[in-house]
Image (tube, rainbow, N blue to C red; front, top):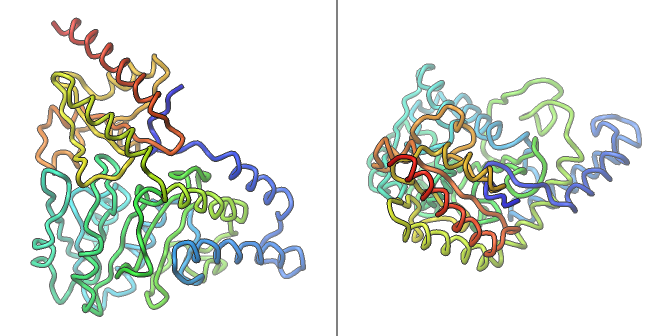
Length: 379
């Protein structure tokens, strides 16, 4: 099997699974319980929180465990909007955000907030001048995806942070679900107030994630109850998941120090696909993460390619896994100026550090054969 759908989810690392099983078996007490067994569970949870904070260069109290990227984005955006609505009702985001951001923005608009959607260029990157022009006295939040989940474009996070560094009442949220462990980011050294990532994107388990929140930022909680996670996310803590997440993050950040093989595979795929006739590559190497490639085959729908490759035991996706079953043209690609036909036909290859160049060569060979056979049917 060749698995090239890692932006949808990754295979849990064996060491991470071992950690999860060990903790779940031996530290199953509720961390909120008063007895000694519960206290030991609480100590382990706190140690994992501190470990994650140290790796990210932030404070322990700035780490909130979540169930993943969607929950983290909801808590960050709605939590901040409702907490600071007395200061302003204007939010800035982009046209190419994940549904867990885009749909939250639509809900906020229906509740009296005003949202500005920044355009992107043909490479999938926002214009800083448009961002600056959109800022008003009422702007309380900018929410921008650090690495796009469909084409891999990297946004100028450093420059965005610098733009609002002196604006006391404008906060900056980054959806970094696709960037963590792939694109280096010094959170503690940047003007980022909130940042989301999800464990299952870097070989941890589903249902685990983190929201980084600067200690001076206040959020209205999404889940009320027992007051866990400093009151921001009530519910019995997923101790084993949190410990396993810390283990997976350490491994991911170690891999991040050497992305050369990942980049070699990406560049090989970009070059070979671009060389094939009637192919359009939507990912631009100069502004993209090392693990995402998006392209269209002229005259063929994306799901046709996905299922044809599946028969060869090769797995890719049609752009975002979260909306692929709807079979709609990618809103990200349309925002980049791609035609409806090409956007509907787009597919995504997404890599992990476990992939090898030999797999990429087999993929190209099978892709060429599939396109040739499909073209014969069309003709």
